[in-house]
Image 1 (spheres, one colour):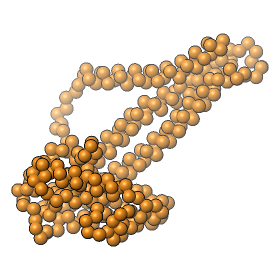
Image 2 (image 1 turned 90 degrees about the horizontal axis):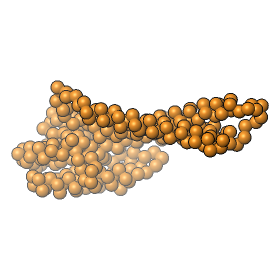
Image 3 (image 1 turned 135 degrees about the horizontal axis):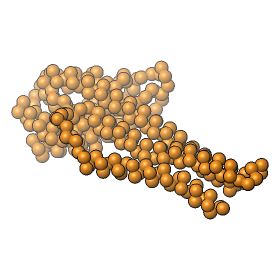
Length: 288
């Protein structure tokens, strides 16, 4: 009897995962066998495309695991009720072996709920990052009226993505978008920057600066090999934050994206228009 109960418990756990995996594989195979052509042209890459793909991948992975976990918990609870109902002496208290399916069901349910909580928190962060990237893109698009070319989601070093690249009259700006939530509702939205670290109201960070600083030299080297030497300036945009900038010249530029107008200011030594056109064309080949 114990072996029979253990087999039922194992089946109630394994079957939901196997059925979910089989259905996912079947739907993928059907999609490959019956491709549907679309009359729509492939849309131009837009700001936040990378974040959208991350969100879609997160949701697929979440349902691949969370759905069978919750189904398995329900099946195990029903299995426990069935086993208790088939006992010859129902007035006798359930033994540890009889409670095994219920215990596994509770464990699976707890794991499923914990997974839902983690996915919800990660999705909230990704959604906030997507919103911040779209806000930055809206601000940068104003530069297109001032003789600048703005591109989004440019492939960078080692598979990383550069959120935005602005080909301006004086230089190329590699713009990374940072998204940070307030420490508490109604808290201060001011960040102080000294060239080395970002001092938010209750914490400090350096990693966003390192990430922004790492992409600019690589982009400068890549453009030098494609079109010739072009100055590349790293910029970190923090939508919604008021930046108190006390950084020295040459440090990563940290701004609220509303203050991006300096990129289009007439320079003392502007880049030739023909060079800027070749830079824009080269960068367009790295947008996907």
